[in-house]
Each structure stands twice: as structure tokens, then as C-alpha cells.
Image (cartoon, rainbow, N blue to C red; front, side, top):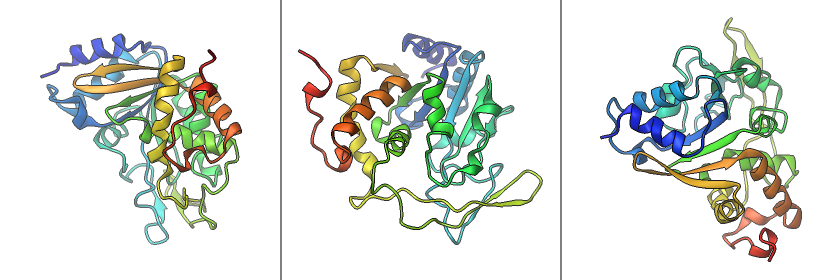
Length: 261
């Protein structure tokens, strides 16, 4: 059984710095048995990252719809795991107001980081929280879930104006503010003819690892990947400039695109 001290040791060994901006995608189950459970995992990250900015996705795309149309950042559950739901309830954590792709942040510049998400009508705009990962030279950690959970790549595709990524029409959603008023926020949803295009994002793993943009590590029993947001964004942009439909199939990315012999 892992303790908080064990987990902090693993976090440090992966090369994460306390002052980093760190986005975490997670599978709690993959970590194995932890003394104190999921709360201890959060305690480890919060304690270690105290000088930095710690971020978890708190997405709600799975349940938001024309019928369930009011997004309340204070109460709406996240659809992306137990750690995200527990984290957003921690003291000092601030959740963004994006009705389908919100994030929760704790630490340095958290309020500034999450601000303004109610302005955007796409899931992951360059000017929003996902694009700000690039601006802050963030690190993105995947705990036991791999790159198919890489929301950041959805954002990179947005920046590169890749076609056939959204529904034709916006869904009429509303955001409930802390004072109880409602903000009308129609949003486009992710859509591709092949279904979930994110299932093909894992073809980036080999290029990211071989170029040093990402490294492998462990947290408890979980296999982890730690990536550099700037490198991930830049290399994926290069790939998309060669082939805008790169993620429409399972074909591996040609090695000569990223390794110069």
C-alpha cells in the first residue's frame, strides 16, 4: 500500500517541479492501493505543488444537453473521474465556467488562469484554459490513462482550424453564476464522422517519447506519461500541417516526420 510520502517521491522522480504549471489526466484505479485513498493522492500533489499551479479537467460534456442545459460550476459533477470530482471541492480550488470542458485550478494565478471561459463557443479555444497551457509552458501528466485522454490535442486541432471537428449547430446551454443569474452560452460539441477521434491520439506517444517531448514514469502502480505542452503543441502542429486528417485513422506517424537521420 502506497503512502503520501511514496507518492511525493514518485512525483519528484518524474521530473515535475513544485513551481510548474501541471495539468493532470488520471485513472485512480491504475495507481493501486493508497493509504487514505484518492484524497491522499490529491494531498500529495497539493503539498508538492504548493508554489505552482495544479489543474485537473472537470469536464461535463457527457451530461450537458438541451434537456440538462444549466451548468453550475459549484455543483455540476465532473464526468472524468473521482480525482477530478474530489479536487474541485478542495478549499481554494477555482473552477472555470466552460459548460462542457471546464477545469479546476489551485495555486499561483489560479483565478487568472480560469477566467473568461464563458466567452467561448467551442470546447478548447486557443484563448481559453487549454491554450493557456502552452502560454504557461505547462506540463501535462497522464496517470494510467494514456494519450487518448489528451484534451490538449483537441485544442491544438482547434488552433490549426482542422475541419470536421464540431457539430453543425450549437447546443443552447446556460451557465449559472455564483449570484444565481444565468449566462446564455450556446456551444459547439466535438463531433467527427468516425466517432471519438481522441482514440487515435495515442499515435502521438511514440513521436513524443522519441523526441524527448514526453517521458515515462510511475505513480504507485500506474504507468505515467509526462509531456511538455509547448513541445506537444508545436510537433502536433507540424504533423497537422502535413496532414490535417492525421487522426482520422490508426496509421502510425511516419518516423521521418520527426526523426532526422
